[in-house]
Length: 266
Ligand SMILES: Nc1ncnc2c1ncn2[C@@H]1O[C@H](COP(=O)(O)OP(=O)(O)OP(=O)(O)O)[C@@H](O)[C@H]1O
Figure 1 (tube, rainbow, N blue to C red):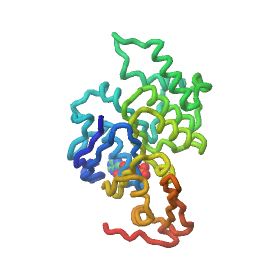
Figure 2 (cartoon, rainbow, N blue to C red):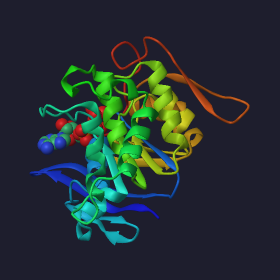
Figure 3 (cartoon, rainbow, N blue to C red):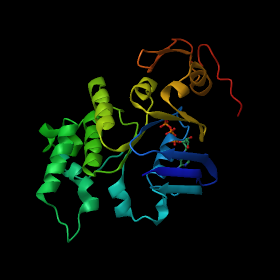
Figure 4 (tube, rainbow, N blue to C red):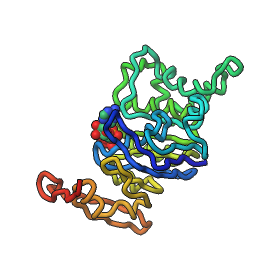
């Protein structure tokens, strides 16, 4: 079961935001999406999630064009945690997570005890069970983020798309979330800014720059000193540990402002 983009471009009005992206997400993998601010990660995620139709090319879910798949069916297969989702509704944490069950409910299949269990499990997974009766508006940024994740877990998707999921989280919950997601029997695509986290948790990394997908490969293939310099404009040493994992040590004072300049062709 794969999620696939074929020569996908997406424009906002006349502005080309992403162009000619071809990418196949394999079943069960954890794919990290990295790239500088404004490189097109969120735009690409919204196309992968089926929220935006590509302006050119095709987005396919298990070989079928996403535009031909109904909303409800798509929501049973793809869960998307957006970067800045919020709600003004007066709802509790439990109610917010229960929304994840919406794609499964109908007149013939009303809310059941099984749905209660799934919601309780999802709340437990992100350590939010104790806050289930709190009002959404009273939560901190990190708590809201964990509830978003729980809502998407309650959706029980085959594909979990996460746009900067560790935003707002303290280090305990950052690592906890990535470990949790990694252990789930789902396919994950996550836009990540922390490249050491990408190295630790991803099977493969896709790197974007200025709207283009410029490389896809294992963390060791992508997180090279040269790529970090060319794409992110930072100097770093890459150490490979005895398990073959890479660790990045950044050089302080070498971002474009103080030292090395990005040597890029527009
Ligand atoms: N609806 C839109 N209209 C005009 N420009 C847009 C629109 N959506 C995105 N952009 C622009 O497209 C570029 C890519 O944005 P996008 O949010 O996809 O990048 P990103 O890699 O996720 O960035 P960040 O790391 O800062 O979250 C940015 O320059 C952004 O300003």
